[in-house]
Length: 69
Image (tube, rainbow, N blue to C red; front, side, top):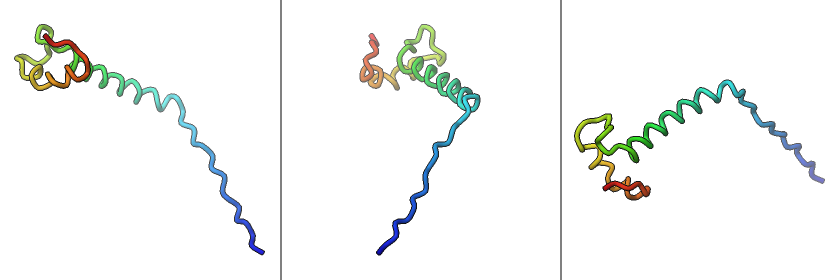
């Protein structure tokens, strides 16, 4: 006869909310900045002068559905 080996029971690790919130706020700020750069930067309120950023992101802007012209 063979004996069945007992499988270890895994317990999920709990992460305290106060450790997650700063990272979530940081990620949200980065994502909002990227959304501005890709979708809203048209030159009038541009953070970077000139049209270099606009032309660099032009095709990606149309791919994501943002109007450009």
